[in-house]
Length: 73
Image (cartoon, rainbow, N blue to C red; front, side, top):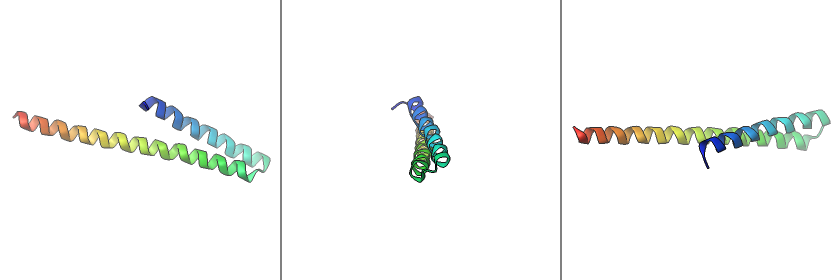
């Protein structure tokens, strides 16, 4: 999945989750409120995982670039 697509999916989960949570509170539905909280947390967690993967890839690329530069000298 592309990075942009992941961001859109994560944001969608967070927005829909928050809406379900509010709707559950407004209607007194504990189940809907819980489902909303879970969907929001799912989007938040996926966002954190994607950010971590990006940071790891950046570090690896930096290390490989340094190694390549050292061999060139």
